[in-house]
Structures are given as structure tokens and as C-alpha cells.
Length: 434
Image 1 (tube, rainbow, N blue to C red):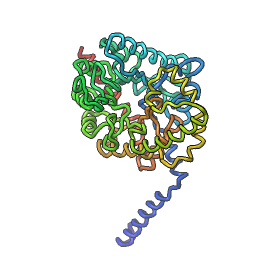
Image 2: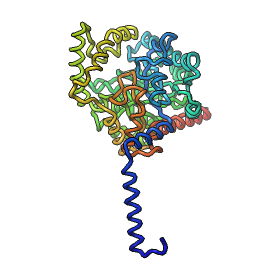
Image 3: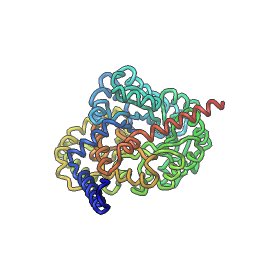
Image 4: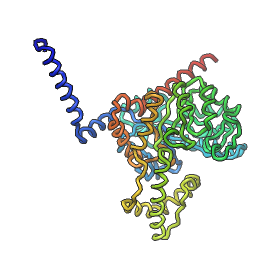
């Protein structure tokens, strides 16, 4: 090009630029999907919130089978989900010795179930990870990865020593409350009636923040109140996470984090794991679709002579055996509904709506602080990502939005694992100081 005059050089360079731009724009749908699949296969995909039922951890019925639930090993394989954070969840009960004892027993049964799956039933298919290095090693071996989350510190009771015990059992993050005020903090549910126990953290909650820092447990902001979260971030010596929350500016529900909390989380060095829970992503759209779906489902149930429980929360709060029996009774209704869904005119909350939240969060606090979660088997799921088997669809939408492989790797696991590393490093320093 050195023998061409300046005008000719400029024309040639412009032609090369235009040709390159046109070539990139000319990527076909098939090529885009293929490129997205390559990215999906190479990055470590990690979902920070999957609820479990101990009923699915038996010889007769377990995660090595393709059960009807949203997350199990076959579905993880099908959708390319590498890491499932299995949640040791206990609902909020009375702040009494009896309540604490029952909650702890419930929690220990879930810890035991996860260890049974990874150590006895299917150690050749899935392994428990305790560190980010474990995640990378296990994933590279071709096996799936299990990690353990603790939802609702209610199960700790009044014995702070249980925090260390739960860490020793594999727990790597914990929320200080759930739907209802705990002995540690106010819950976001206080917004319903403006009744609070502590106006944030209790004194015991403040001690719990220090204990979690000391033993390397990430503090989870996804259920406590706004004041509780701001106080926890101010007190914590380590970064925090919101394991399954979306952006409140995009959808105004108390479970989502507002911009003030998000900016504090950014300053803290933490990460929000954007949740694919349809009513947290777009309440109005979900309500319209739910109304239409319920009307059709009710009509089908009446035709079959089946009684439906229309309140989803009531179903979720049923004892495990009762819930399983109910779900079995309505299986024919669900099957018929699936066959007739084409009759619906309302649209469900979908992957594009979900990634709108990711876009908002990335623009507000930066890509270093944004991750991905589903809340599967706890109410989560959207059209296009309604089980682990459909995980690729999230990567595909991120590729469509123009995110690079490096950015997608960050959101799927890199950011969360970086926080885990920081939390564990700081814990080691605290312990070394005595």
C-alpha cells in the first residue's frame, strides 16, 4: 500500500472497513447459534440458586434420574449447566427453641442429602466443590459440580457455633433471613405491613456478619430488608452476593434490589446473580399470562374433575409428601394444558425480558458485578429457561445482545467465583489474626 497515493489509500481502507462490517453483519442465524454454542461449551455455567427436596435424594428417586423437577443431572447435561448451587432452605418459623431445633434438623437432612448424592449415589457424575479451584477441576474432569447454599439463617438458632458447623458441612453462602423476620435480621416482607423487628440487623445479626467473614461464608442479600442489606455491607470485611435477585428499577417488588443497594454492592466488590423468576422480572406481564393460564387450566381441571390449588405459595409451603401427592394428582391437568397452550393469547415472561435486567445491571454497576441464577425448584423459571435443560438459551440471548465470550464467562461464573475467592482469602487472614 506504500506505493498508492493518499486518496487511493483512504478509499481502499474504507472499502476494507465496509467489507469487514458487512461480513460480520452477514452472520447467518445458524452461524450465530453455532458460535453461541461454542461459547456455552467453553465457559463454566453456574447457577447460584436451586432449591431441593430430600424426597428426591433416595435410591428410588434421585438426581441421577431425569425427574420432573427443574434441576437434576440429566437436565444439567442436556442444557450444559455445569454448576448447581443446591439450597439448604428452611422456611421462617417461630423464634422459639422448638422452632430453631426443627429448623436445624430440616437443614441437616438437606446437607446429608447433598453429600449422599455426591459421595454415595453418583460420585462419578457429580462432585461437591468447596472452592473455585474445585469448581474448575471438577468441571474440567467432565463431571457436574454441586455447591451448597444456606437460605435463611433461622436454622442457625441461637448457637453461633452452627455457622462454623454449616461451613464445615460445605455451606458457602447464607442469607440472614427469608420471608419473615428471623433472629438475625428483618426480611424484605416487612414492606407489606411496615412492621419491623430491628430496623435492619439485630445485634445477633451483626455478630453473624463477623462470623461469616471469619469462616468464609458469603453473605447473601436476596431476602433480608433493604436496611439489613445496607448494614450488612457496611459491616462486612468481605464482598457479598445477592444469590437470586433482579433490578428493582426494572420491576418494583421488594425482593429486587434498588439502585442504592446495587451501588453499595458495587462499592463492596460484590455480585448480584440476576434471577430468572418471572414475577420478579416483569410482574405485569406475568400476571396477565398467569390469569390467562389459570383460566385455561381451571377449565381443564373442571373437565377432569380435579381440584386445583390456585395459590402457588400454598403449594410451595405444603409438607413435602403432601406437595408430591398434590403434584401427582394434577399431572394429567398439566399434560392437557401443555397440549392446549397454543390457545393462549397472552405472552409469558421470557429470556429476552430476563436479559433486559442483565443489561440494566451491567449499565449501572458494571459487568464485574453481575451474574446469573434461576431459583429453579423454588418458583423460578421463564419461557425459554424453565429448567436446567434449557440453559443454553441464556447464552444465546447474551450473544445476540453483543456480549463477548469473556463477558459471558464472567457473568456465568467468573464474578461469583472471584467473590468466593476473596471471601475465603479474607477468612484465612481473620483466622490467622486469631
